[in-house]
Amino acid sequence: MDTDDLLRRGLDWVARIAPYDLAAVFTLDEGSLVVRAARGHLASQVRGHRIDLARFPTLREALETRRARAFTEDDHRHGDGDPFDGVLDLSPGHACMVVPLHAAGRSLGVLTLDRTHCESYPQSVVDQVETYGQILGLALDNAERRVVLENLREEELERARELDEVAAGYGVLERSVSPGVRAVAARARQVAPTDTPVLILGETGTGKERLARALHRWSARADRPFVAINCAAIPASLLESELFGHTRGAFTGATRDRLGRFQLAHGGTLLLDEIGELPIELQAKLLRVVQEGVVEPVGSDKSVKVDVRLLAATHVDLEKAIAGGRLREDLYYRLAVFPLRLPPLRQRLEDLPLLCAAMLAEQSQRTGRRGMRVSEAGLARLRAHAWPGNLRELSNALERATIVTTGEVLGPEAFELGDMPNGTGPIEPAPKATPVDTPQQHDGRIATLEEVTALQIQRVLTHTRGRIYGPGGAAELLGVPPSTLQSRMKKLGVARTA
Image (cartoon, rainbow, N blue to C red; front, side, top):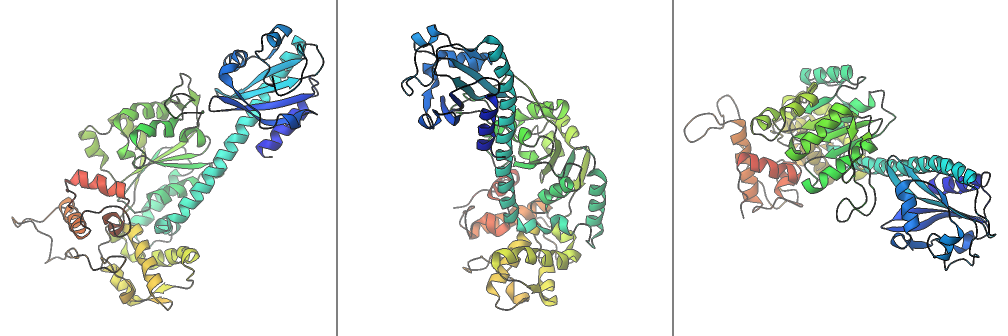
């Protein structure tokens, strides 16, 4: 049943308690009340009718007190209370009732009942309709939540389609021939049926979100919502509202109540992606949610109970973040009850045949190229690459190769690893590390992984003349999101060249 059908049926049912000539449901919209549904022989005259809530103190009072009331002849005489004044030709003193609709601590609107004859509704009827209004409010809230969740599912499906680069991140976990990956899969299967918080660690592009989806799918909450939020992709000023929700008027632009990701994930699983980028000022509030299972929307002094299985993921070294004062130690120990670390692609090259087959199958829906495969020589070419962008970079390489290849076999010549996607020229490749050819600093010592990473980022930035975003930008060439690249540049002290 959709929301409109629910309201129509709800208005039909209320006639069994209180007879009416017009029944209408007004919903809140930016300081106004707008007719969402109407029944009765006068319904056609009020559809879409809007009133300014500031002009009706008694309606505001009903919303604030959450008590139904029948309007008296004095109310009508003073022109306050009748939401259809000037729209319907109803006699002064006609029977009129307003019933607030609310649920989960938020106001949804009002139900109004009108009769053409001059007789007030008895208080006993008002009390019964008030109780019915509470039921209707809960039903309306549930219907709206279903709509929000359905939209969220559509967004998640679209996001999943866009994440082909890690589509095989969990699909081949248990078929992997890599001992490290098989160990992760086994531990994930063990923890999935529980509600224990899981911390997923790994470099950018290793498939952390896909592993989180696998944990949700393998759990008892599989038929409930899976909600993800990237803590690094949302401005700090908006992140609190995104996580915990807000009430109307909580800040400029908050024109209506909004549910946060914790509330949307109620009963299901919430993934806090890039938890290492969560602003320190929000960590205390998150800690309370983890400890007590309640959220407090921005602008509200009421707590809302939530039942959420919490997963967190990051590429950041959290122990260093704690030492640097960027992460609360108590929050870390709450999230890291059961850590899982995904190995980078360079440590699981034996999985390349499986990964390539799975990714090419996923991409065939978008590229229209079915039956594509990588030759043995092509696999040898892939094994020789360092894969700083891991599965995401591999997916990009396979898709580019598919586009430029006329046949069904991708040989070594199809892979322009380290080249510009638009063919404008190659990027100077990073030196391949071998037992006799290891990256070194000018003082002769072996360079650390961070130093090698910083050098490669600097080379790419020089090639793109400092451009990070867009096609051919440094982020795309390195196979990482722009926000992740900027964060890594800041951490490594890499300057943006012009």
